[in-house]
Image 1 (cartoon, one colour):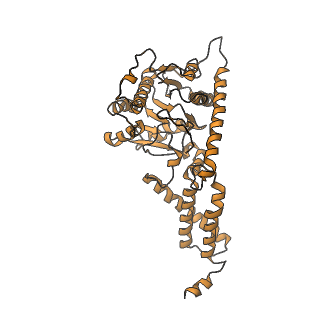
Image 2 (cartoon, helix red, strand yellow):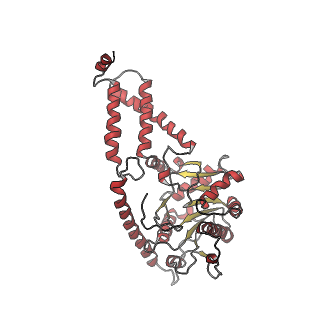
Image 3 (cartoon, helix red, strand yellow):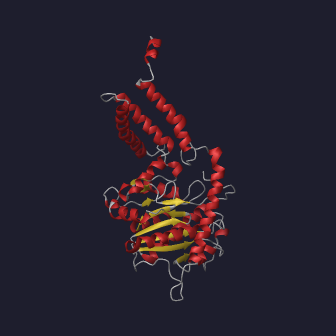
Length: 394
């Protein structure tokens, strides 16, 4: 009986064709096409990671030098150094860049500020209510980049002219200091400008080209929706390595099933047309649904999210998870609540400010969301919290 059934399986049978398609796709074509994609399951880490990390560092050094020359060559106006971007007396959005003195040569904060400046100039009158603000939380006076930027951007220096007893207090670890620095910068933004929104950006998070049109759409249209109103914060970044479907975010599972429900019937129709087979087959549709779901997951959800950049209205807003804080948007009332909340928690290794913020959601009955795809790129391979002698992209 079994032999008789096997003989019936010819090269023209549906089962054989779909089996061959699966083997060729997942065993040959996808690995060949994706072995250099950093966030794909097909990525050959042992072959490419070291070289790609070195190339990335070299490119970052060049971009740091370019950002340094950008500000050194910024023309003066009437003999005085111009402010890079000055909003109306009461800005709608304050962009606060939190900076410490990082690895010399990369000029991370210069890269970030120069990109914001360029995008604000491109944005023009639409961004007249936006204000750049630098918050320097470096304890030493050696932060050259912050000194340079003080000629162009308003700066708040946390430790300037104060008695810094941080080193004398053994209970204040680097994670708690980072939280206190964050609180200081958020509070300074509110007190200095009294804006409607504060965008807190770490000094190694470069904005994407679409950041201002997308924020305009999100804040004026999407966040007015009842289920998004009064959110504690809106994250503009989530690590690409954590964006796969197989993760503990339930909303992604629904999205993953939706991918299969859309692509399954489409691929089934294409297959039936090419194979000249009449009618519609539910088993074939089930196969192509699972096929497309597997392909999207293994190639990398991150790369398919890039399709949403075609329009600001295509960006999704979903419930936030705990990691990480390169770029966080706070409505002013929520920012004041956040200051109160963070003053009630103590950070330590394994419980940084990102986990503290996330833990407050359930404890205080708050909500928070994340934008997909990311609106900033995390370019820093050197942490301000721990030494990293062998920086790597993963």
